[in-house]
Length: 235
Image (cartoon, rainbow, N blue to C red; front, side, top):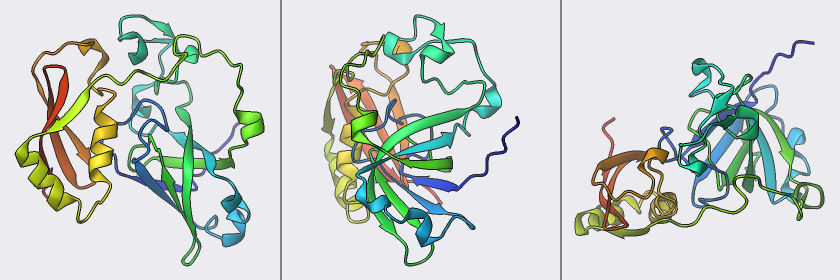
């Protein structure tokens, strides 16, 4: 049986590029995203009762990597990128069917003009197609005696975050439009989003990541993530 998937809508996310997206949902609670349902799904009755749930499952497409095809084995970042495991033992994006599953906090529902859902704790790239929404059921979905394989626990917080005086000035300005921008930057960087091959290296290299309309520049220095600038991107 061949299935044809139709997007319910497309995510509007604070993450404008793949680099910097948390590797699992819920790690960065300040990460916001929203979904405006497309016709014919944009009917208030389609989300009737959803406001009684704190979290939802989102089934989505890995549109940013789908063209790369699938791989039978991948190198999980959690293992430092040094060990290959079967793709079905990981949450890699390079899957036979490029589908993902993410649980996010449902932060709001607006049905005044169609249907718009607000999420926090998102790990989704801007423009991600959403194929289904399902309520999270704590009694069924939270299995207390489950085994987490090679990732049994939440990743340890790797670095402290500091802002240079220039970055602090930028933050003050950016916070007028995006009040949660400091929390977003701090939560994103504390797990050290550098590629896995860096390991715990303190090698000096400048990085940039796009958050909302801002380009955040930072580097690892003496075991800390030092934010050097937060500049508005050119239109």
